[in-house]
Image (cartoon, rainbow, N blue to C red; front, side, top):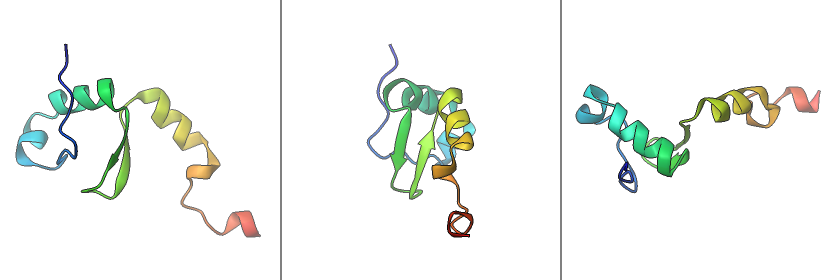
Length: 68
């Protein structure tokens, strides 16, 4: 069984960078679409979620085209 990740994991901590797999496994298992307050960003840990987000225009950084 994979233990849950800490509430607000530091994804850039030296230990997490040196061996990222336990933390990413915990996120993927317990919180696959994770809001990381340290980074001020959403973190997607599953391939299907990343693929869907990249194909969905609602997640684009393009804020001009919808108004042209």
